[in-house]
Image (cartoon, rainbow, N blue to C red; front, side, top):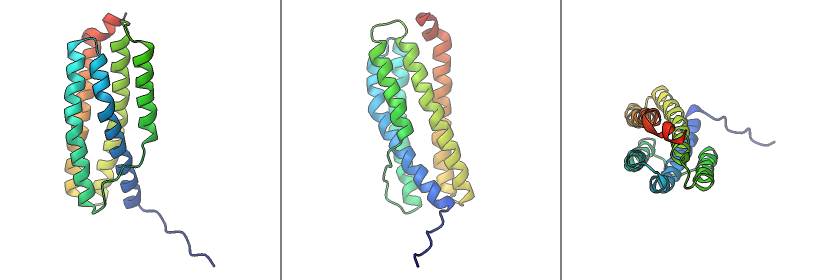
Length: 166
């Protein structure tokens, strides 16, 4: 008789989601320089460059969370982020040279931020339930950065980018 499959736990789910977010952040690190280079306004370019630097710190914090749970820092391809990156590439190609490019890049970046906010909020909650206090703090730090970036992007959209695109 075959052995019963091991029941999956919240720890398993936490690890799988951590691997997913690790992959997502690495994909974002590769995409942000392209978005910064394509940005038509200095403010948007600076926002992308600043977030790229922040993302490097976020990757380091994720690596610390892997250490806390005593697992190797390994990515599991984040298919959701692959799709969002592909959408960003399409915007870069389809709107190159147009007044609407910055609005498209900004909207694309906010979609990424919203995904990350969702993931980090979930991971932070699960880390709390698993009693991983240090991980909660690390994940919350990243969550607050993602929210701040989202707010900055919203401000840029309202102040200039969307009017320029219209």
